[in-house]
Amino acid sequence: MNKLELLRIFCTAAELGNFKDTARLLAVSPQAVTRAVQQLERLTGEVLFHRNTRQVKLTTFGAELLQQARPQLEALNALLRPSQQQAEHASGLVRLTAPSAFRSVLMPLLLKFQQRYPLIRLDIRLSDQHSAVVTEQIDLGLRIGSMRDLSFVAVPVGQMPMYLVASPAYLAQAGLPQTLEDLASHRFTGMLDQASNRPWPFYFAGSGQWQPPQIQLQANDAFAERDAVLAGVGISQLPLFMLADALSAGQLVRLLPQLEPTPWPISLYRPQRGPVPLRVRLLFDYLQRQLRAMPLLQAT
Image (cartoon, rainbow, N blue to C red; front, side, top):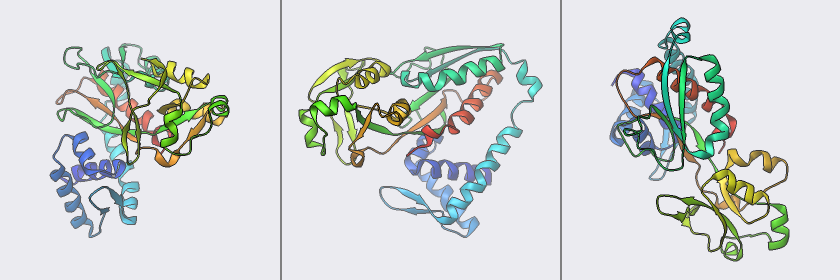
């Protein structure tokens, strides 16, 4: 394995903090990730990760190497991008799929991209169900959680913390839950899983999935659910990037932070390997840079 590939695997593992997730994202085996890290450790003469059965954590040297390697890889990617003159004349259609909750994150970015490259047409599919990428001829996608299809080319672009929240008005009427057991007597808003026609469960650290006993309002749109929790309908679990403004304004209260699950990885992916049309590469590189620069998607 060449040194560039070793650094690419190392940086991805460092950002995700998990070798198995790294293997899924890069479409290699977990053993290949382990071997790459071990080979890089032999080359540097330093231990890069503290490892145990549950997680990996960067050593001091590993953190320093990541800080140096990441801009080098980004500079190389920039070198291999098409010239500005070529890019300005790029044209054609790009189909993009993403969860509907990302609408407020993605749309400003995509509109700026459209202004910069007016000859590129965008077909945006926002859905909380996984798209049939072959049938729908999807070029790019955003995925929350682990990548299931190892044939995809995927890169990590952030993390999605999930917060349990309620409005001050609701808590004044129903009381402030202090434990997981306290939640049983509360009302909730829910997000409909259209594949099963059931509400999505909540997730908590150490206890896995938890099904709210009383769904007061259920919707198939994350923004409708957020509107409901802001109105005091009940307690909800939603991504931090949808809640940050309301939390800062005191419109929502964060509940049981000690029980929050590990933030879910967010990946940008291409279903096809091999040669990539210029229009697709331009959008892929643009979204990768922009999403990685968003503080709310890097929060833990």
